[in-house]
Structure formats: C-alpha cells, structure tokens
Amino acid sequence: MIIVLTGTPGTGKSSLAKALAKKLKFPYLDVNKVIDKENLIIEYDKERDSNVVDENKLSKVLVKLIKSNKDLIIDSHLSHYIPQKHVDFCIVTKCDLKVLKKRLEKRKYSKSKVRENMDAEIFDICLNEAIEAKHNIIILDTTKRTLKGLIKTVENEINKN
Image 1 (cartoon, rainbow, N blue to C red):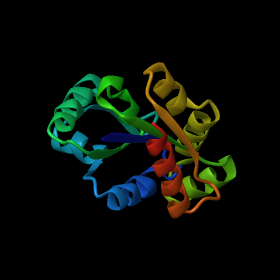
Image 2: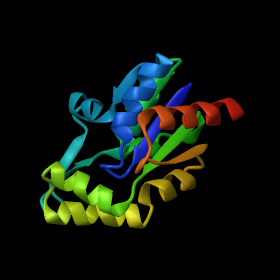
Image 3: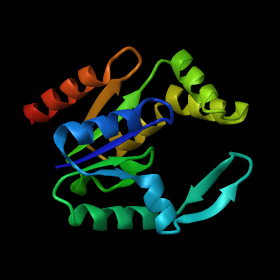
Image 4: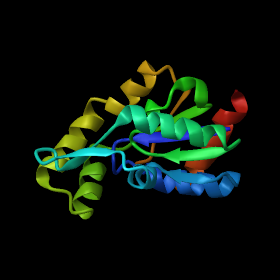
C-alpha cells in the first residue's frame, strides 16, 4: 500500500508520516532527501526563499521508488504530484491558522515565508491539487488531535476501502 502525506509546511504531516510508518511497519520516505540525493533542485527563488524543484523528474524518481516497494509512506508537501494510479491514499494534513503561524515562527521562517504558507493553507492549495490529481483523499485536521487519534482515523479510513 502506498500512502502519501501532503499539506502546508507546519501542519503536522512529517510527525504523522513517521508515526504512521512505525505503526504500519512501512518504510518512510522523506521526499526532501530524495530531492537532495537526486539533485532535483533547478534553482533558488530568492523572493520566495525556497528551492525550485523539477516536479516532473521528482515524480519519475518517486514512481521508480514506488515500483520497488510494496508498502511505502511518502512525506512531502509535493507528494500529491505523484500520479494517482501509483497511490492508494493521499492524506492531506490541515491545521488552525493561529497554530500554524506559531509552528512556522518557531521554525524561524521569515515573515514572508510564514505569510506564503498561511496563504497556501487558507486557499487549500495542497488539498485542491490532490483533488485535481484525483487522489483517494483523507483530510485530517491535526490542530487538537494526538498522533494516536490521527493514526486511528487513518486506519479506519483505510479499512473502509
């Protein structure tokens, strides 16, 4: 089973992805490490204070990794770009804006980066892109929930299908 986790940075996707991988005994894949290892950064965007990734090459690399793994948890705000036919479930993490702002500030994000990520959450960018890609989506609000509770919800959703 291939499960991808996406969501605005700071919404809890990495914490959930690692806990879910441990619970299900699935390998955990941090897409940022794949991006670095495969040299998929094509430029640095000074204005947005972030790297620009070749999404097509990233998708191809991830599909290869998926094909060589029966079970996998994939963690990245870009993971919803993987073609739907290769993904069983796409978990989209969401979070209250006040909580998200605090989390991003704690990470020492610049004011503009905090604003950009809050805008992404307000406009449901990751969710809308996952819907557009026709993924089988599980939406989780991580604001007031424990990892244990979130994992239980995921297990229930998986068992429904």
